[in-house]
Image (cartoon, rainbow, N blue to C red; front, top):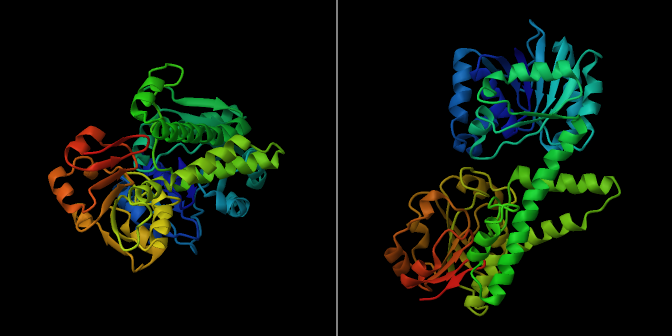
Length: 431
């Protein structure tokens, strides 16, 4: 098929790469706010497994053409599919972008709205296609940062909002190469699919925030929350997924989807006290490691040095959007704490966000560089390189012998046996 992809989101880049990889003729126009030159230089694209190489392969084989903002879409052959993957902030541009591409589309073309917009937006975009024979469908963006290529090419499901059988057939043909092992399409009405996408992330966030509340209670009662997590997860009605307490979640998609769900509820006149609490708990949790540090040193933090392992909002990405580290840095700097921060991928993004701060030193080589001369270590992002440090060396480097585990990846008793004070989320141990 002949496909036009519009957008600069991870979903757009992945669709352009994967669709060209399986033989479709793809023209990709990144959004004007972030053209191909900017994307090509971005750390997040470089760090996404297989994605950059797949884009380059498509360009090399002539199946993928990436346009500059001023370039027109080739009009030699009508395009069968318009794949729209914009950020929520670009919703205002969506209608005009669809209208501009409409003359290049075939008379029976399908618009695939892969953007996370308010409920009902796919129907509104269909009106901009300019031909009653053209249809718009909603395809929920279910990609995960750090494994987008795998999620697209070997999907567990496609959540398709579609009110037209012919459009469904065309979408199935477009994605046939990724639907071979079993039928992974779940079709429902367009508005139901749009709301489902928002509701999924709302539920996941609620589980995380609830588990964080239980971890706080466990701290107060002297209970190891890991036992509680295992007890809850063993109940088949609950399961283990998204039951890990931590120091807060972030990310561009997850955080924006929650805000979008809140906006949808507000616009419908149904204000959600539950969602407000979920968001408040998450923001409060981002300060947890700072409060534990404050308690350990009885508020005497000025002049101390803290090492931080991890800035990205999750392993496998270079992005720091809404990441807990940003809240931590503000709190630490307000107390005059010098921070030695290590991250294997997100240092450039952090520098862009906070600049050259006098109380910040950054490292992206050996994680042990960041811990030299530090009073305490905070584990914020659970990169695999952090899971098994040289404990004897770490204990000798940390003057205060304090480890603050924001992801509960370490065994408290083992850490304590190495002579360190361990403080996790709902877990603790002393030498």
